[in-house]
Amino acid sequence: MIRFEQFRDVTLLHMKNEETLVISCDSVGGVGEKKEDRVQAPPEVVGYYGARVALMEVIALRAKPLALINTLSVEMENYGERILAGIEKAVRELPRDVVMPVTGSSEENFPMVQTALGVTVIGTLEKKADLPPKTDGGESLFLVGLPKVGEGVLADEGEVLSMEDLYHLINHRGVKDILPIGSKGIAHELEVLGEEGGKVDRETHREIDFFQSGGPSTSALVLMKETGVKELRSILKAPITKL
Image (cartoon, rainbow, N blue to C red; front, side, top):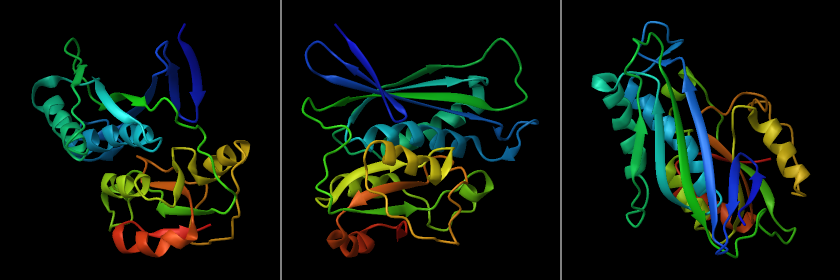
């Protein structure tokens, strides 16, 4: 019997063979080059960041992506193809041992005046994975990257958490838990960690808006040993801030 479980922003499917599938979804609307789009951005950028969100939610759990499904609410010819080019760019940022199909659909019946798309990523998790990850109480909480949305993403100057940064985090021995910031902002994700028993020791940072949307996962809360922060600061491109 398959057992379903909701964990943070993903759905877990515990299979009969003890394998766990991880399903993550994201949607984008009103961002693109169409007449009614609220934020003007190249379709390639829209596809890239739309795919990034679902991929990063899976990867943050140390799961391996297996497949990506896109649902484009736009025509495929030219415009949809450009969105897919952005999605493929995000997929190419995965490690070489991750080979995954990209499939989906588009809107061919009606002319669309606004950009919209959805992305679903399916991944697989190790049988013995602990969720939430086990900690020993000696970790501190950090913000890696900064929450950005809309024009803030387009104007980024190196403050966005990259896919490369995320892989450095999951592979670092001192990192225990990673929680990408979603549209509800840092404050909401702090509550999620609190409900899961995570230790939250937050100072006041006037330069950070804890209630701003995190947009396309431009930052993440990271629970890790302070001894590894210096090394990570020399590796990551995104800023690291202790909370």
